[in-house]
Image (cartoon, rainbow, N blue to C red):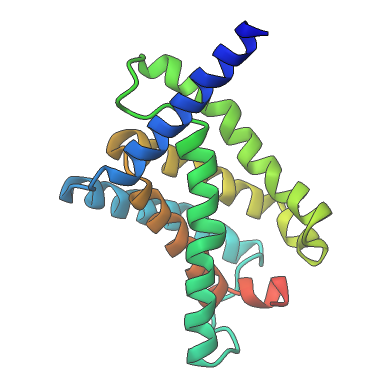
Length: 186
C-alpha cells in the first residue's frame, strides 16, 4: 500500500511540476516566430489538400460578428486551452525534464496517436453530429499534423501559451473561414 501511495505522490508532484512550468514559462520572441512558421507550414500543407478534397470550403461562416467573437472565445477554452493543457502539458515531459529527444518522441508519438483517436471517440460519445467531420481522413490528417507541430513547439518553448495560441488560431480559422462552422452545424 505504501508503494502505491508513493507512486501517486510522485505522479501528482510531476503533474504539478509540468503544469506550473508550462503556465509560468514566458514565450520568447523566437518561440512566437517558430509557432508562426509552424502554423503557416501546417496551413500550407492542409489547406490545399482540404480544398481539393472538398473537406474545406473558402467563405465566411454565416454568423454575426458578435457570435463569431463568442465562438472564438469559446474555442480558446475548448478545444485550445483544455486539449493543449491535457495532451501536451500533462502527458508530455516539459523541456526542464532531462531526457533525450529520442525518449521524448517515444512518449510523444503514442500521445499524438491518442490525440487523433480522441476526436472520433469524442464525436461518438459527446458530440454525435460531428461524427462525419471527426472521422474524415482529411480532418484526421490535419489533427495529426496540428498535434505534431504543437508537440514540437511545446518542447521548444516549454509554454502552454504558445500551443494554445496555435491550436486556437487553426480551429478558429477553420470554423469561421474554411467551412468548419457549417460542417459541425454549430
